[in-house]
View 1 (cartoon, rainbow, N blue to C red):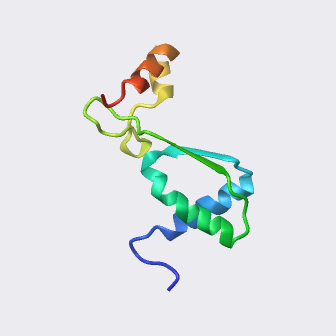
View 2: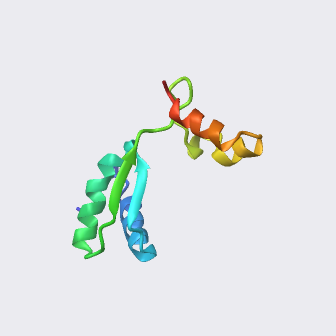
View 3: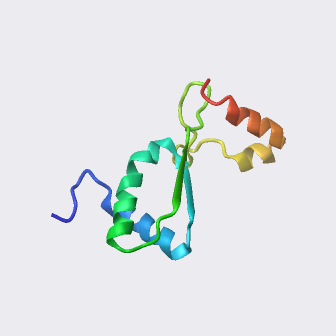
Length: 99
C-alpha cells in the first residue's frame, strides 16, 4: 500500500522534497504541525535528503481561542500594519493571543 485516504501523503512528500530543493535549514511552524514532523524526517531519511532543524510555536489565536490562519481569512500582519498598527501593537496582540 502506497498511501491511505485519511493521510495527506502528497502534502508530506511535496513539502519534504520542496524544502530540500530550496535548501531550507530551519522550519518554523505551529504546534499543530508537530505530529507531521516525524513523517517528514522519515521521508528525508528514505530519500537521502538533508534534515533541517525544526521549531514549533504555540498557535496564535483570536480572543475566542480560534486560530489565526490564512485559510480562515484571519487578519494578517500586513493588514494590521496597513490599518496603522505599530510593530509594538502587532507584537502585543500576538503575545496576548488566546489568553
